[in-house]
Image 1 (cartoon, rainbow, N blue to C red):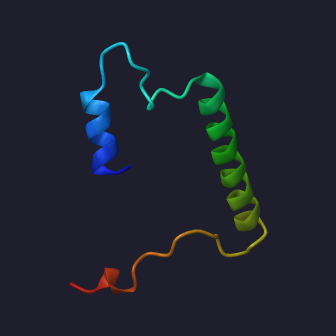
Image 2 (tube, rainbow, N blue to C red):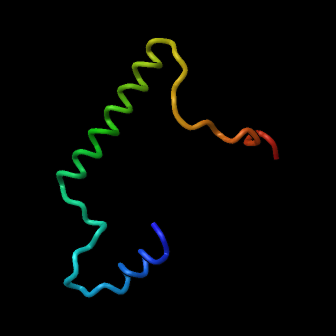
Length: 63
């Protein structure tokens, strides 16, 4: 999301479509992807493998 995009939303007329409202089918699809990723992580953990994903910054434990 860029500042120009945020400004365009802010300045849009009240009757204009809101690009942040994506509809139930898109929300359902997104939640399905999240569910599949969570199930894959759980399967990896149950198999004794390391989880995949972002690693925390290396300097997280340093003040």
